[in-house]
Image (tube, rainbow, N blue to C red):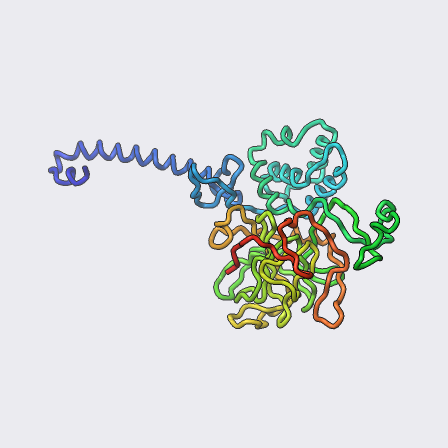
Amino acid sequence: MFSNLLKQPTRQRSRGQKNTRRCILAELSVLCLLCISFFLSHTAPGQAAAVWAKAAAGHFFGKESTATPSQPDYIKWVDFDVTCQAMNQAFRYDVDTCQSEIHLNWVDLLAYLGAKYGGDFSLYKASDLEQAAEALRSGETTVEDLTQNMKYYSYYRQAYGAVLDGLVGEYEAQIPKEQAPGVYLPSGVDGGTPEDPETVWVKKYGLKAFSPIAKSFPYSDYDDFGTARSYGFKRQHLGHDMMGQVGTPIIAVESCYVEAIGWNQYGGWRLGLRSFDKKRYYYYAHLRQNYPYQSNLKEGSIVSAGDVIGYLGRTGYSATENTNNIDEPHLHFGLQLIFDESQKEGNNEIWIDCFELTRFLSMNRAEVKKVEGTKEWARIYGIKDPVIPENAEITGQEQVFTESHPADG
């Protein structure tokens, strides 16, 4: 059509050009409207103010969405701004009602606040959560009714659940015998264990996740997520640094399996632990020179929440293995969310700010003791976590997860 128009004399094609231009402009206008509509429906929450809208159907998207009708959709971006105070308040409601007829789930409560505040927890007021929780406890309303007009509640429930769902629940804890309720001490059956007759196992409900730093070991930190880094190339810091002494025992936050272990040019000696629901990847970097990990760990090993997994150091920033090139000893602790395996590596990775989360977890720090004659520390009291799968193979002190999984490059 365009080639024929160009071949016409100027006077003869002028009217045709005008009509054609009108058609093209009309088509471009329709196309622009469609593009804007598509873009607005696929926008990340952190970009909402810049592009006027958030996505529909409870999912927030990045700059582009590759989903088709035949492909399941998944979350592309998460800004985790929940404060320690809000987490603690919601957690207390959860634990206080765990044996009640109406049990309040702490992630449901936080997702309600997230939807109410648009994810901005600088707006947090304890009274907002108190009012909602009391209405739920009394039976005056339900979570479904409370959130039915909140367009993005589903998104916040999925996003916050990916961070928090594995941290609170039922478990068995090993505690000193003198601290155990009498029901656990009948005729010596539950009073004491073969390996330690002075302890007992009790069933509990509560926080079964731990701080990454062992109890009684000092550390300092601040909210450094997103600060500039320049080694290798300019980039943002996508983790949380916890400064401490070389050799400080590092703890498994959650029961996981070891997905990655070994040297990385940037992280030095590092560990990557994957949760059993596969939504969380915990990254521990800059571990101790010469003796970074517990000796029984390898790819596929299972660790229980609260286990000692390694030791704080300052390795990294070098292509040469086992090099100390970090100025200040610290643990780089990172948490990646994975809603689809395509997000594990590459430009679509989702790393969250862990500062407030580590503050919350500091209420539960694992007690450890030195293993005489070694360079290792070990936890004093054990935990039995029902999240550990039944297909775990146990070899001596080591548990190995049999499912195949990708390695960290």
